[in-house]
Length: 260
Image (spheres, rainbow, N blue to C red):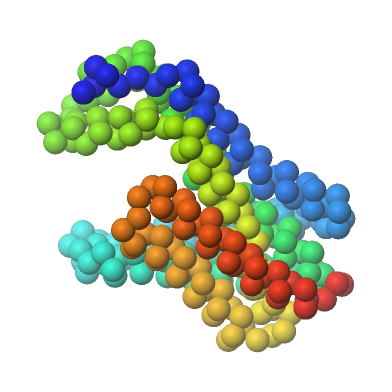
């Protein structure tokens, strides 16, 4: 099978374009939002740092929770539920803390959108941008070095799994590129929507309702996308439709937030 695996120029270009789209999208949207609303870049930076902090805490918690052989790793339902809950609690708490303290003077609703772009930027950069560029580099290495270099030191089972992964990566189609790019855009709007909801929690002081709602929606989205028996295409489509539903709801919330 390995003799037939080849990363074509078209495939490498598709990965590169996907990486560029995922990397620049939150920045471009933030730039356009600032141009329209004059919202501060400081809000964007706080969002970026808040996600970085939440991600660090989540990694530490995962290390202790997902021990080999525990119920959190052996039961798929519990595994994906806990994964979703960790993301929901860590990220939405970070949002709340950011709006409550470093951005406490930012009471205009435009801040919630700019924050969402910043919060999303790290995730989009890591998941869509860096991952796509990594495939470009791996594809070039595979074409130049071949199977022997990639399977060096691996047992037969691990080598087979690795080859299956390489074959899937080399089969990255135009449709795959479009779906991954749209998924990245959907992720941006999902983070904006959740930021609007948490901003509502801070502005109204009703964190029991709005903060818990944001945590629940974040948890549910991550859980369903992981637990449901979806193909890669199905997961991308789920994320896109989930973002559309959240965006519709958040826009209605946004309309009732203060201008200043």
